[in-house]
Length: 258
Image (cartoon, rainbow, N blue to C red; front, top):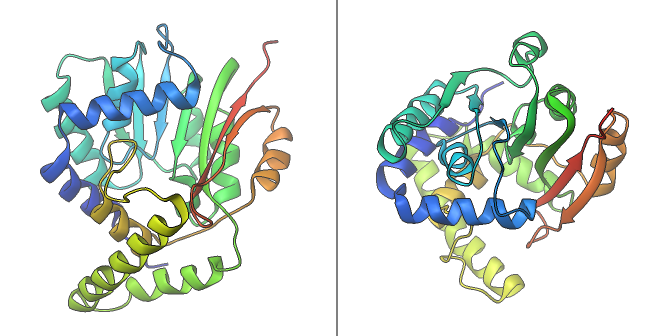
């Protein structure tokens, strides 16, 4: 299965945009989602760490041991470089690992917070990836998932993403320019906010490339995810609905203490 090179996009984003200001925005988004000001020494696993900015942000708001994993070696390289620039002495490690490799995942141990924002729907086997990720949540721990919402247009977007990864680079650039305009206008109409003012410390242009190129691509409704994760022994605590119909729903789960 030919897929998108997320790592190359994260490296380009990191070179152009990762700095202390964006790190602070990422940290604040973590606080808001978790409804906590401080992580109080919690161990954290960032699944699909991308640029590594959220692993660094977690440490900045009080996490103890932090591990970031990603299947793409360029993502790991970007994460290591950003760590060296933003928090060179932090107890954070990054390693290449697939969320679909159950043995490798189990070898990581368990964590107080398992954070998988916008990554597991790009594995090609989302439900298996969610199962492996949920198994690493310690008793009393928390899991954050951000998964693309199921919408009537989702199959169309899957086709667009498939096509993007099969055309020459010049055609990819043209697709990105065209869809940047479409996505900008659509988000502005739905949210009534300037799409260039990105949350989570991200960037509109690189998000557009990620969106139209992000293949494999899967999606689900919050209720579908809740039912599946409940079978894994975790309870839904909070849902933050997607801002746009095909965006990511954010779900926060907790594992009861034994």
